[in-house]
Each structure stands twice: as C-alpha cells, then as structure tokens.
Image (cartoon, rainbow, N blue to C red; front, side, top):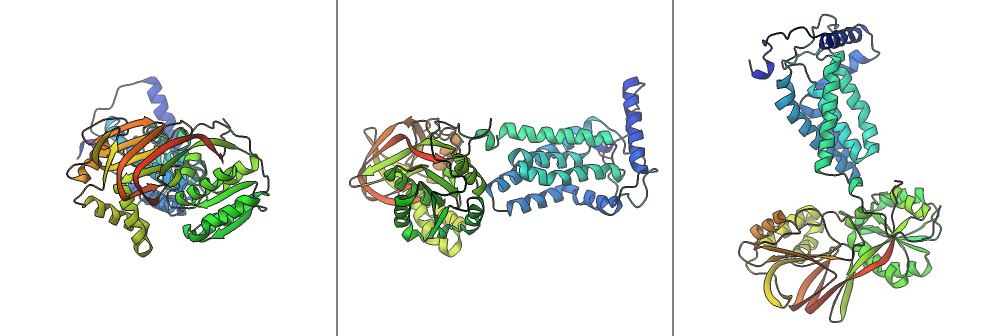
Length: 497
C-alpha cells in the first residue's frame, strides 16, 4: 500500500475539543445520509464521477474559451491554473498530512454510492479543492463567468458527502484550500482588473445616453458583425458605418466631419487609422475591439460593447499619449508599438499567407522564415554608433511584462518611449529568446533597453520596413520618434472605486 493510503498509523489519544468536532462531523454526515434529496440520486453521483481527474473542469474551461471573448479565455486559463496548483498541493501535502479513513458507508443508501470507491485518505477532499479552485479562479477574472460556474462547483462538493466518500469537514477544508490556491495564482499573475491603468488624466467629453452624435466606422474584414449587433442594442441612436479596409480612411474622414464623437470597431491597425483622424479633427475617440489582439482597447479596459457603451453613456474618458514617427516626407502615429527588424518582416509574411491558412498559422510561418534568415535584417546608427540589429522595439509607454512581446502598460500617459534592441550576431532565435528572458529593464550581450521621450535612428537602407500597430510602411535614411503627451482623448469606463 502506498504511503498516502496507509491507514495503519496509531489512533491519536483523547483530546476533548478535537473529539467533539469529529463527533459533530459524524453526526452531520449521518444527517445528510438520512435525508432524501430530490433528483440527487439521479444527478449527484454522475456529477461526482465526471469531476474525476478534473475532466469536468477542463471541459468547462474549453466551453468558456470557445465563447471567443477575451475575458472568457482569461477566466478559463486562470481557472485551470488554480485547479492545477490546488491538485498539486492536495496530492503532495494534504493527503499525506492527515491520514483520515473514509466514512463508513452503512448510513448511505446503495443507490447513492459510487461504483468505484476511492482508496486514498479522506482529508481533505481533492474534488472539493479542484471545484473551489476552478470556480474561484474564474470568478476573480470574470464575476459573470464565476456566477455561472459556482453552482456546478457547489454541487460537486456537495456530491462528495451525498455519495458517502467524504465527511463535511473534508469538503470544507478542500474548498478552503482550493480558494487559497486561486488567490495564490492571482498573487503570482494579477488579474487584468487588478492591473488596470489609472483613470487619469480624466477628460471632459460629451455623455451620449442613447448614442446620438456617435458615428462608429467598422472594418468588416475584422469579423465585427456580432460586436456591431451588441452595439446597436446598447446605443440604438448611434450611427454605424461598415466598410472594407480600402475605404476605411475615407469613411473615417467623412464620419469625423459630422460626428460629435468618432467611434471605431476593428483591430489595432484600424484603431491606429482612426486615432490619426481623431487627432486631426480634435475629436474624442471611442474604441470597440473587433480584431484578433486588440492591445489598445484591452489596455483601456474596453473588452466589448457593454464597456464601450457604459463609457459613452456616462461620458467617461481619459487623455492618453500618442507615439509619432517621421522619415523624410512620410510620418505616422502609433498607439501601441513601433518596430524595425525581424518583426516587420514577420508581419509581411503573415499578411501574405493569412488569407490562405489563417492568422495564427501564418504567424508561425512568418516566424520560421525570419529566424532562418542568414543576414541581419537591419543596420542602423543608434546613439552615434552603427550596429547590426535583429530587432528594434519602441513601445508607446512602458511595458511591464517580461520579454520582448508587448505585455501590459500600467500607465497610458507616462510620457515615455520603451526602447528595446536585440543586437546582431549569429543564431537569431537564441538571441531573441535570451532577450525575452532578460526582460525589458536589463542589459546583456544580446539585449539593451532604455526609456526616453524621443529617439533618432539613422543609416537605414532604402525600403527598410517599419511596423506600427501591426501595419507596415517603408522608411529610409533617418527616422525620428517622439511622444505626443496626452494628445488623444479616448472613452474608457472608469472604475467605481
């Protein structure tokens, strides 16, 4: 018999308080066994079995991820991570610390009992820990999804007493450990709500209770039909203009001429185009995410039509920084990032193949192509020194997640450009990986980082690709980058606290 099921340890001596609690626990177990629960005999044993090895929770997480909402996917991932930590804790520490036998099955009707009885020790309940961990983790990320999952988690925990495999105290202890695991995961990886940028500096904007005065231009290539339907329900008097990517700039200019508030629905590239128009016309911008990643909208705290409509109805907005680049007679703005080197090459390959094989496979293909290159994609003069580079990344604001890929910004009006460079050399894949592990605020032979308000890059060859918010343009000679502090007013829901 394995150590975690060895129940031959000596019975502990007399202890008044402990013995009273165990007696009460036994009475509660017998009380539950004697009660007739409507539909319990038909449902609870099956539900208990379905939670074996976390199968029920993995299936629930898959269904949540299939909802295709960012919050649903994050909630599912957090729930699974919390479940994993709870299971690890229970199986390595919990079951081995208290060697409590399972309850006697005499009071439990045969029809309720599980076909295969568990052989591990009773305290604490692993099923209850997994249920509580998953439900708590989900609720911390999304209260709405948490409310939907909670009754299922409660029923699984209850089923362990109903089927006679655990005492009530086993279930309570397991649930407490599970909830603690979810809180521990939040401590390691804070929820998006916990990392929301500060609601400042606030801006005075018109409140549009029914949407009158708002003109929303939607990029139909982003697959925004479901978002637009929800938007029309939330703001029935808002004007919605749907257009193809080729007509986007013209439609935004027309909308700006008659709008009190300019709205946009699409991905980061679409939002970039709308921001440039809003800046020229001095209009506040309302962003409804409708693309694949939606970095800017999510950093604002706008995840869907409900957040969008709430901010517009209440007149809640902030001023944010805008990044600007110029090279010769060509210039542009960026709300998220601007980059030179391997990333623009990757974007070009991805755009070429995405319509045939989809965005994610095309992204993988692009990464493989650029990492197999036998030459440096970029040579530039930076701070007076010419050097080969694999990647030059410029973020509009400081990104706080480790690695080179954009993560979270804790301030959208910090006045800084987050500049990171991966130096040239052999084996670009290893250098990029080393730079990602090094993080944004360190220096290494492969990676350097600095935060500035403006930057000048010279010595660029003609036709050098530059990516800004997922769009690619060509530059040559010298590129100047600067911050436009608090230049753009955008609607965003302001937290009540």
